[in-house]
Length: 590
Image (spheres, helix red, strand yellow):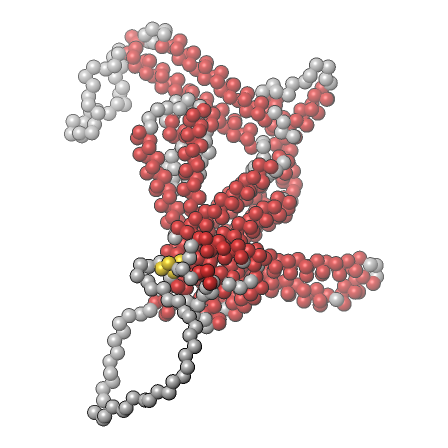
């Protein structure tokens, strides 16, 4: 008998290749509820860090290029300790600031004051960055003086008469292109040239505008250099470095560069090790306060995003922001303590080893005791290494564990460690897929926002055609054109704007930065969404739990389907008594 043929009518790709579930993370991440929560998380951290920058003392702030120098020393063994470099940089800044005080005649010796006392006062004022506002006002006054001189020279030039018109009566430009009669867009030929005097006045006006613009540019550069002496905010420096690493990770992942000096792993190391370690080690008090703010925002809003993503992934349904926030508030302690407990374990074990090592300072007997107990120190190091590796590999699974299972921090630590050590290569593969896919979607959203800004700038510029005080286009001064794709943020040249123009420029920047903040909100939402999917996949692989198994609270009984027409199925427990049944009669033989 011939074998019955079987026809493959379709392939369930997600069942055959489970990692393709990760490709759902973009669709899950762009939902408005998750974006709003991601934006709230980002703004909370950003505003908290900016407030810390504002209240932090000038001497405790950072210097330009500090994190990059720390990176060079940590990664590439640059010569000299970091503290020596920073001290030398601060001394150089003191000398430069003292030169500015002398240049603008701000810190002059008082009558009867000895030269040594005057010099010491100058150094003290420079070290404490006094009279910064006086220097800035002096820069503005000098600029106004130069602009007035330029205007005066221009008025004298245009009132002097012909301005040499007789020499320009018959001087055609040999470099001017000939008119093209076949080109409909070509400028028409001018039968009668402009009067020589009028042309000279136009040339003088152009020279005046160019000189004023250059004067404003020079004053703005000096003004920004003075701002540098105030010190760079630690959060601002940390934020700029970390966002730079995210962009570099995305670009390196897209070009499939993983192991080189400019590859994904290098930038991942910079993101998780260089930036945070620099902040914690070099600015400990600031780091502690910032970590408290960050942990609060990450636990509250990140936990809410994870909860929405968990229900979305498992049941293709969504819960409201209010329900997600209620869940996050109820699990706040678990979300906050899950990543902290392993680090506390490491710290406690390390302190115990260090305390026992104090015995080694006892002459003669101490080294013998240390040698005898050294096996215990190695055992402690083994435990610390396991905890650190488990935390590094399972950190991304801790919040999804609490959101999916409705459990506590200890269950989150236990499951994340178990899944990482049970299937380390599977976990690494899923993470790599999420990084590549996340890089592509991040660059797409980045390009989308950039196109919005370019198009908006173009059409607004058509209608706004007046000039600012520096004779440049007003819109270009209020909002510099995002003329290349990497430029989303920008400074405002406040010296070229009057009162109303400054207000308008800051309002424009508010809306532009709010739009750009959605890129950060999307990145945060994508992070939690992708890791929630990875948690479902790892749980299915290790524990054989179905992907649609998710903890549902009693308050979550009103779920809205994501796809129209999806039926929400609620399960209830019903007790049914067993009733004897009669089997159906057998069918007659064919």
